[in-house]
Length: 411
Ligand SMILES: [Fe+2]
Image (tube, rainbow, N blue to C red; front, side, top):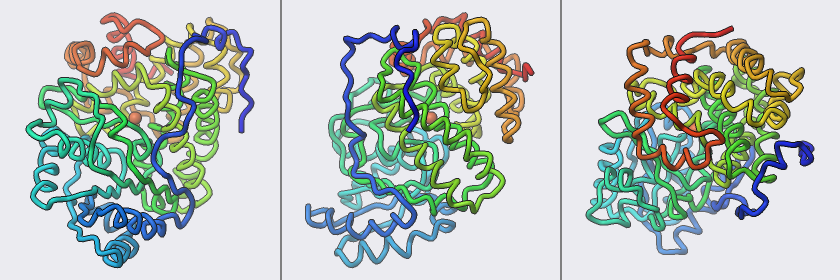
C-alpha cells in the first residue's frame, strides 16, 4: 500500500466534520484468477433464498469470447435455477433498452439478474432490477425524477472489464433521447455478489483495454479530489493510479499478460470503492453529455480527452495532492499552483504515449458542438449532484473552457 501523505496542506483543507462511511462496497466480491468458479457457490446461495429464475444479461461478443457459459450453465442447472439469456446490451444503454429488459424480466418472472460484461451490462440490469420493484415507473421516471433507489431485485455481477467499478457500486447510468446521461444511486443498486476474475479480461481488445482502465484512472483521480474525499478513498485512489500507470502500458501491448490484467482489475475494483464512498466530479459530469450526443464515444476515451483541461482547472486548488496522486506518471511535479499547465501538458502526453491521443475533434466533435455540450452539461439532471462535490463551481464559463480547450491537443 502507498503511504498517505496526511500532512499535506491539501489534506488540511478537508472538512474534518464530514462523516463518511468507512466500509467497503456492499457486494460479496470474489477476486482472483479462476474466481468465475464461485458462480457455483453463488447459485447455491441464491437457491437457498428461493431464487429460482435468472436472466443472464450480456452481449454476443462478451458471451462468446469469455466462454463463461461452461461455468454458469452447470452452476444454475445443478441448483435448479431456470434461466434465459438477454444478449442485447448496447454500449451507453438508453432508457428504452432498460425498459425492454425490465419487460422481458417481468414476463419471465425473473428473480435475479446475472450480468456478464462491464458497465453497460450492469447499468442495464441495475436499472431493470430497480424497475421491477417500482411498478408503473419507467426508466425515464427513475432517471429524471432523481429517485433514490432503495430496493431492486438482486443483481449478480460477473465483471469482464477492468474499469467500471459498477460491479461493486451503488450507481447506474443511462441516456435519454435528448442528450442527457444521468445517474441513479442508492443502496438498492449494489449487486449482491460480484466476481472479479482477471482471466475474463484477456480477450479485451486494445482500445477497450485502454478505455476501461483509464475510466478507473479517472474514478480514482476524481474521487480523491471531491469535496467529499476522505483519507480512505484517497489512499485507494493513489494505489489505483500507481497500478494503472505501471500495468496499463503492459496490458496494452501484451493482452495475455495475466499479471497486468490482475493488477488492472484490482485497481479498477478499489477505484470503484473509492468513488462509491467519495463520489466523482467534473470529468464525469462533462463526459456524459459527450457520449449521450455521440454514443460511439467510449466512456474512458471521452474522459481522457477532457481530463487535461479539467486538471488545468483543479490543479490550482489541490496542487500538492494532485502532484502526489500523479507522482507515478509525472514524477517531477513539485505541488505548486504555477505548474497547472505543465501538469496538463504532461498528462496529455502520457495518454498519447500509451495509445490515447484522442481529443474532441478525433471523437467526431467540432467547434460547433461546444454550445450544445455546454447546454446539456449545465442542464443535465446529474449535474447538481456532481456539482455539489466538485472542488470548483460548475459554471458555464468553466464548462466552456474545458470543452474548448479539449477540442485539440495542447502539447
Ligand atoms: Fe466512469
